[in-house]
Length: 99
Image 1 (tube, helix red, strand yellow):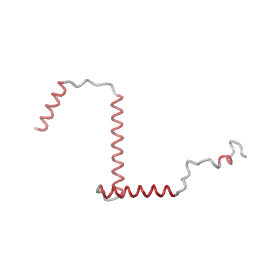
Image 2 (cartoon, helix red, strand yellow; image 1 turned 45 degrees about the horizontal axis):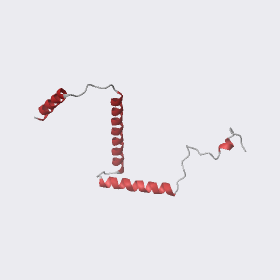
Image 3 (spheres, one colour; image 1 turned 180 degrees about the horizontal axis):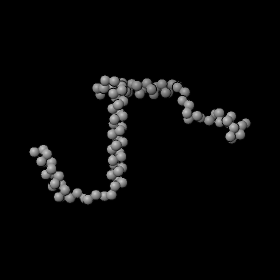
C-alpha cells in the first residue's frame, strides 16, 4: 500500500479534469435536449439552433442585469416616500407625453 503522499494511493480517486465516460444516460439526456431544442426552434420561429441559443444568452444577460439592479437597489439607502405631490406630477408628465 502506498503512503498518503504516494501517487499510487491516489489512482482510484476521481479526477475532476477527466471527462466522464459517455454512457447510455448521457446519450439519452443529449437526445432529449436536442429534441427539446429542435421543438423550440420550430415552435418559436427561429431559423437555426444558433439563433435560439443566442436568444437564450440574451435573456440570461438581461436576467443578470436585472438581478444586479435589484441588488443595487436593495443595498441603497431608502429614498423619499412617494406622496400625493409625486403622483400628481407624474400624471401631468404622462398626460403631456400622450396628449
